[in-house]
Amino acid sequence: MAVNREAYLQIAAELGAKNITLVAVSKTKPVSDILELYELGHRDFGENYVQELTDKAAQLPKDIRWHFIGHLQSNKVKYIAPFVHLVHGVDSYNLLKEINKQALKQQRVIDVLLQVHIAQEETKFGLDEEELNEIMGQWANMPMEALRICGLMGMASFTEDRQKLRTEFRNLKHIFDQLKNKKPNLPLSILSMGMSGDYKIAIEEGSTLVRIGSLLFGARS
Ligand SMILES: *Cc1c(COP(=O)(O)O)cnc(C)c1O
Image (cartoon, rainbow, N blue to C red):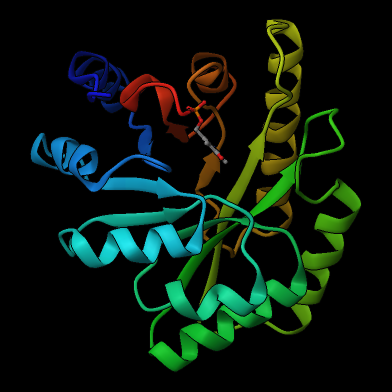
């Protein structure tokens, strides 16, 4: 399966004009596909699995910005802590603590996004609003010096219903704005929402970063 260069150039231009970050989601795809976009100038790539990410990172140029977008288990943080650029799906205080601990060991600061549950489906990970407030409260009492909370991430329902997608994204944007108001001292600048099927709606609703896989790399088997 070849990389869809035309789609890439068109999407990159569309997003670039709006100052929106494009994360190319390369899970299950070979390093040759990643290199193809790299050679077109792309640097932000997203992966869901720790083992796959570390394998690929070892084989690819060091100036790639790797986004971890899957569900991260605490016992695996140490494998990506030396190099990960942004961890998108943090949904517990224990995971924050572990990321901070591993970042300290690496003598670096790791940027993270908290994942908020916006879909109606039960299967998607993430915090509800109450849990988000709880974590922010714990955080306020015990800020972690090797960690920066840079924003929120969410996944909408798997549906063709555009109005429903819009409502879910709008809800996340609202939660994001409220959080910014409550925590003016935090560097909250990233709202990660939108994938191949729904990124245009996500952008209309205020996304600052989209995670796109299949439109760029073809369908995953
Ligand atoms: C796989 C994945 C994507 C990309 O999905 P596409 O529909 O292929 O664009 C985006 N975000 C997350 C969290 C994913 O797991």
